[in-house]
Image: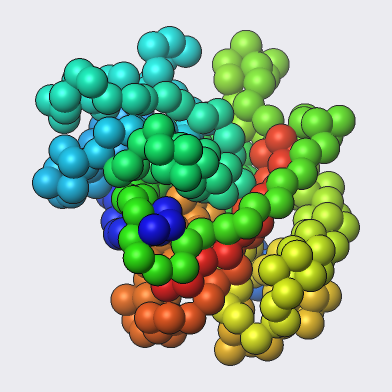
Length: 301
């Protein structure tokens, strides 16, 4: 019996930014591959967004003994989002809940913790929630609104009689923490900022080596499927070319833009639903970004 993904669901915010109406759209689209982004109303918190996907899957969540909530845009500095989710869903009190403050690699980090809890027999059924509302930290002139969408994903993890998830590899370069950051601007308001060129160079420097190291660890070649954090077409295509992965095995799905920690589970869910990836096939999952941090793992669908 090994920890495995039992199911994935997601929720995208309702307000659609049709980027084709923006000035210099085609120039931006060529770099990002993103046609539209989705933002939540300012009065809708990351908890509200997560509750939408959780309520659709309440039957499964009520079986869970653990909730992990990955977010960097919590409604409150304290208490944790996971505590509020427990109350809002009217879940049992003898439940283990906690938040993880991680960004674009957050799904991999959360998955690692979930697998460890199950393997140590501390948990049996886990609800891994990833959700962020970055749009709440964009000013009108902030160009990152052309990249990021507000979204929430729910991944149910439990034991199964099949090949499990892992192993995992991680890395961190905290010296570049300010390359993707929410901090106070000149108007003393919290605003999201990202140095796109620095993030691009960081990704091309760290991730190819990470993938090579991981494939050696699991004794696999590049014939498996790959789903990376869906950052932008420029980053993804550059990585694919540098690592030399076959286009048919490399998933690029930017339908909803960059959904931060939800981008991997959303892309995985859509690839399985469309039958690009079929039952029994292995997938390499890799996240990278805020921190700067990165992580990689694999699973058999």
